[in-house]
Image (cartoon, rainbow, N blue to C red):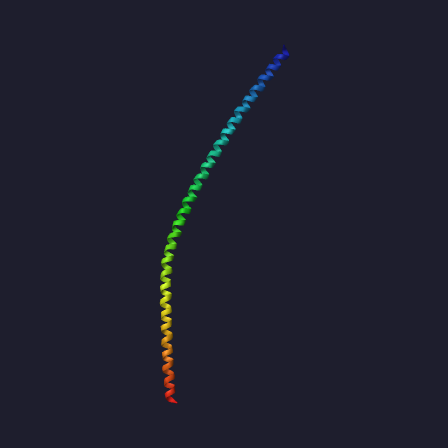
Length: 108
């Protein structure tokens, strides 16, 4: 009789322990799930933020590129004008040289 009672007690204790373990496991799993979910939320939020920033940067870059294109056109025009001026200067210089040579011929 005594031994059966002891066994029953042991069984009861074992059952209780197992129940405790199960509840603990459930709680930890729940906590882990919660943590994971919050981490994912944070990740998504961060992703969204970076995406927005990248988009903004891209827009600004495009704007700048447009401005650069305008500048490029201006630069091209300026270069052409500079080239024209240089050729004009060369032509004038050559004319002067011709005139100087002509006056030298007259002396001799």
